[in-house]
Image (cartoon, rainbow over all chains, first blue to last red; front, side, top):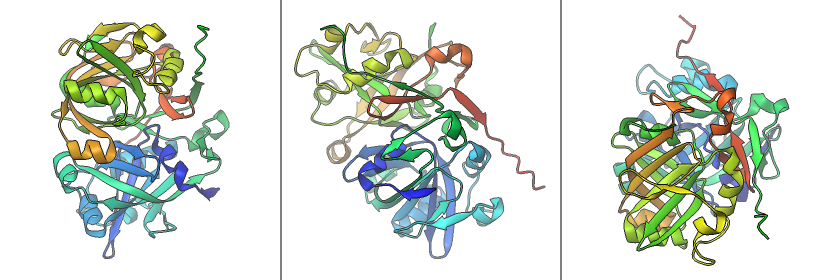
Length: 193
Length: 193
């Protein structure tokens, strides 16, 4: 079930490097693309950097509206992630309609969040024209966070065999996605006395 | 076996969001820390952004030398990754000695790369004082890339059961690391005719 995630835990959602779907909306037009390149840059306030090519329709809507959303796709959405990352929404009409993508409205900004994902964030753009221009790197501050409590609860991911269909995707290139199905726990004790 | 990776494939090494060990060296002092937050920002030339807290010893050496390296730890190094991410190299002396970390010299810059990892990159800092100050975000251009050919060859990761000990780590928080042991392949064909 979809549940609100405390903003102090929002950076955790993308801490492990998942591919995200970036959705935007402005003036009655909307779009969605895939981005393999994002990372948190701050826990409090929760801030995230994401690379959005300035030539894309997503960038155009993001710049015009000052807001964007991230949805984290699961294995069943691998085809969708690869497709919306491989074509433009500027040509050929609304990608949501074209691919039958169901969306729901984000709780704070009302942005289109993608159904069937495992976590969602809404962000306000932090204007950094130089980084956007030089590195296609957009900074945003998270204003809402949601996650499916089958796989993220109490501020933590829990990747297990029984929820393997809710794990995140990590793009290796060429449409191949790694799924983080195994977890190892590091310890701080050195054992050297 | 360790092999050179073509610079045009260097961004692929961190495309899927692995935790990295950041190593630095300046004036006879060296350090290593873990960073969960990094991402490519460009394929050609290969450029990467990484978050390095400006209060850290790593940041001090990085700023002084204008160079840094990334090593990608494998499951057997989960303890080490968690430890070097949890303590400072400014106090208590050289972390390499303290933890018995073996290093070899990077091929272009001679930076200390961590033995037993699955991939390595050397980078020159691109001076972006505002991003470094506001977001602890350091941009670098990759000048050398290496990978173990048991898990990365011909420009691609190959995560399989028989090389599970060479997979990357993806920090979930609290020293728990996800390992991307399963791979799903997206397709572009829509099936809608």
